[in-house]
Length: 406
Image (tube, rainbow, N blue to C red; front, side, top):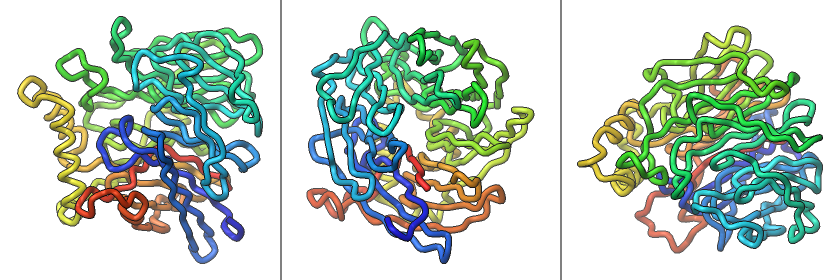
């Protein structure tokens, strides 16, 4: 990593349409803006599934690969070599296989908090077998979690729940007071998987992630919902919405993933809609967009990727009883037959926006705030790292959530 000021970490889940059922790996992309030099390293981990998100400790020495496979997995931040793993099933068994420790919040270099089953747990990296069990988190399926600017509050989103007895939409987010352990649930009109704290105030942002259950009951194999989308600005101290942004379903803001921000804009990428949106924080009204929707010529170069996307779409649901979901997904994707940008992180000096496009298998760096294309790097095929994969199989690495150090 010496000589490269930026380290862009991206969690990998392989070439399937459903990242919550795929492989588990990490991509480390190094970048030096002086001369636009770059290098990369990729690692997939045996015996772990459904890689989803990554977080690097404050000292930049240890990374965590969050996943929906009920493991905690840690790696050396310089080499990606695995340093520790432990099954979370020894602590609690979830009601659904979608329920894993997909995210955590580092408290310092050696301690972190995450959700397992129905509770929060505080871990020491040097003693993973003996965590402290904390209070119940109070949401359906806890997902992204971040500490607010003062570190007083832990804010967290929730997925919809497919498990029997708890099935249905989440439509809430949670707040944990890190001093008292008090849990507050904020009810919302739409489910929000992902959250981001304000850069300096005790606020956080939750962005709607709206899906439709197959046959109106199956929240495991959901379809992308063609509905209006929201951004909620929530006061962590009061546990209440302060402002919100709502946009019509025609805006390509569906199936968001990473969220980042500058002093003036909230920035989030949308894997379903092939876009990166920038919402002005001053009025929480105006927005602009980077469009990464591939044209027909671009799609024609990727027959294996398109075939996988179409095939697995039909695997997820019955077209005869769920035709509305298939048509809605076409509207969400604006007719494209690939998913798109799942990773976006802004550099600390707010000059570079790092992104990773899952569908097109490339990493792109934009100048910020101009959004001018700085660098685009096509990444190698999955077959180079998973030799058992057929040469004719979909070659995408499976980019998902990211973290940026530098």
